[in-house]
Length: 120
Picture 1 (cartoon, rainbow, N blue to C red):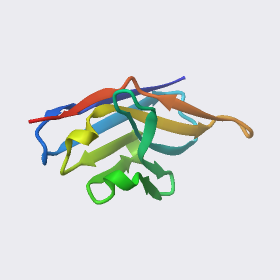
Picture 2 (picture 1 turned 180 degrees about the vertical axis):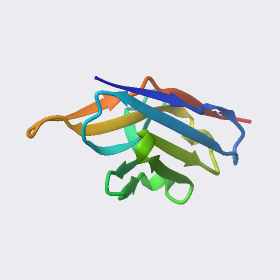
Picture 3 (picture 1 turned 120 degrees about the horizontal axis):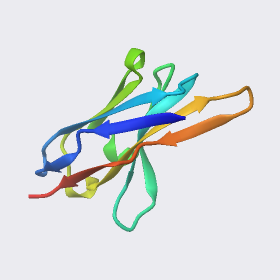
Picture 4 (picture 1 turned 90 degrees about the vertical axis):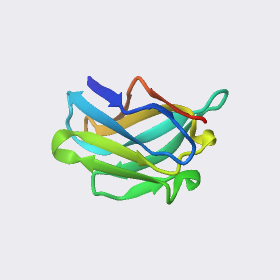
């Protein structure tokens, strides 16, 4: 099993910034990618940003230019720097880890989520 622990959420005013962190521990074998998803009230969980083990990144169109994902591979940690936050960024943010566990099996793990609220 893999455990993911997120931190860094909170309440921020529009235009402000927050930095989320996620530390992975446990049975870590071969991480393929780590990233962040979010779930806004009444909506499905959507991709925010991911980073592969090779360093390639993917961002949702709505956050491009405002959010930046980074990783400390030695510490199995992923970060999400969120700038110019807007009320529509309000959501529960979930850390995700995808790893290759056997030759034929990949598995996703999820954190417990951290609330980000953007409001004046």
